[in-house]
Length: 307
Image 1 (cartoon, one colour):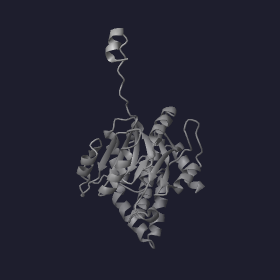
Image 2 (cartoon, helix red, strand yellow; image 1 turned 180 degrees about the vertical axis):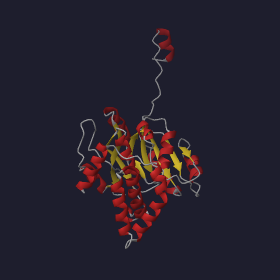
Image 3 (cartoon, helix red, strand yellow; image 1 turned 180 degrees about the horizontal axis):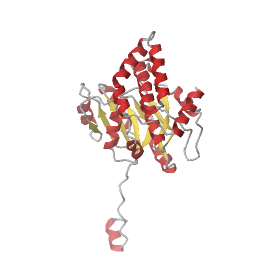
């Protein structure tokens, strides 16, 4: 029936409302222009057509202008400095979608994963963050972290879609935007390195659930053979584990972890470096110290006992 016939018959069809996306993607990057452009080629072809925000953490290789020229639909934010993981918070605040899927410049989402994420979050109102299953490298082998998350000793709560976890991979997670921003997103004291654990703790402390959802699948192709860690990462992880203890754990635990790292530093340069960096950031951590509620602290101890 033509529009003219519809008008004549008095049965003019109602206009179709535009599709409103429920999931947007936030990516952070720094000085990896070509890698980022290749990843955006994949992301912009996803059937869900998610809005994409790229946060350029102070690149000097023309990343921002290259993305704007090749992908005009992608929003590029340039804070002018390296925000670290806080760039994800910066990007999430700029999105208008109820859910935020996080990617890095070397990771993306499998087709259909974001549509499934929307269904999972709609069915589980307490879910604050879903950790996805991750496939690594050109051969798409399973990340060993998948099995660790699946076997979480915290078990599965009836109102969550999978095992409860207190850790995840930052470039393979979907968060409820309101919950993520409510707890402040990623903590500025940590910058990079095991920053996900603190976010999971803060979500749990605020009453949100964090669960492993293997139905959501992300791809990750890190640089280096077998995804070798970047230089200095081990020290940053040790530093941030210690800072997280001072930010959220009981004082006796934080003191014990400090002593342990100091003893390791006698023979391990990475531990010595981590302790020195932690000491420089400790005043900022103490100013933001907020111990976990007792039930969440008990869950952390359950994880530690099971290791």
